Length: 150
Image (cartoon, rainbow, N blue to C red; front, top):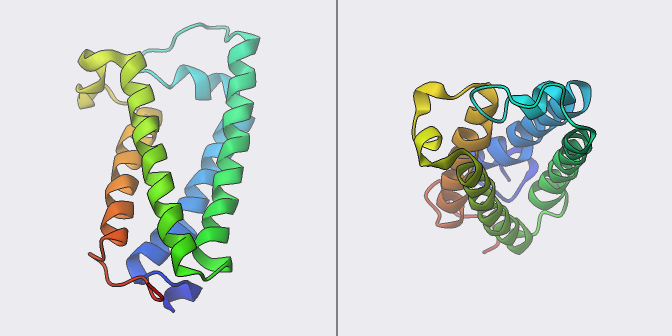
């Protein structure tokens, strides 16, 4: 097993280690700088000061990041069940599309397709989600090697 999982080396590294670390960093941003986390969702800061309702959403999003980090480790390493890993990747791939579409819906096509305007938060929301989505599908399709046990 690559890196203690049923996944081939690259997906194991990405989904069992790197993605949970990035989710913990996202949690840190959402919890320790909620105003910045909210205002950096678009290229130009909006609503300063940030409304309390938006701050609640920042903390809630951070909570979801921790949950996703734990689920990633559970579903790619702890269970060591190939079907669990496969379906986890497919379900989270669907979530990637929802995440990207949510950004598109608020940004509109003018901002969404203007990559030169992106800040670090926007690259995380869109760029990282697209990268992870492609890698999840490639893993399930066997591009990086077979998921052991399928």
